[in-house]
Image (cartoon, rainbow, N blue to C red; front, side):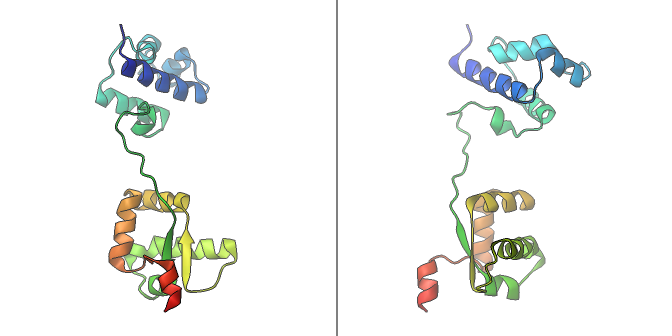
Length: 162
């Protein structure tokens, strides 16, 4: 009898496969026999345990992060992020190679928004996640890096009060 976790994992696997418009046989064909339909089906039903390495290979095949295959409540933390505020004067004056992508992204956002106040720019959570991907770190890791570089405005209200 499959555990609840195995059933939930299987349901996630099935959902991802179906979102990609693949049948079990389609998975076998697309993978040139690497993934047998009967094996993937047994993972999806929770009848067969999937190892971490096989799960990572399956995630690679589906082109999704491993965390997307794991069921809710699996202990994988999806970082909540809020918007951040960048000090543009500091960012643009001290453009190092390390922050070049942030500076370029900030300029693009300014252009898109038509926002040229020149002092600060808020970066939405989705933009922060996209930038973190470019740097191959977590959003909190990028926030830490921006803080260390002195380009993050901790309290925007205090920034304008001075």
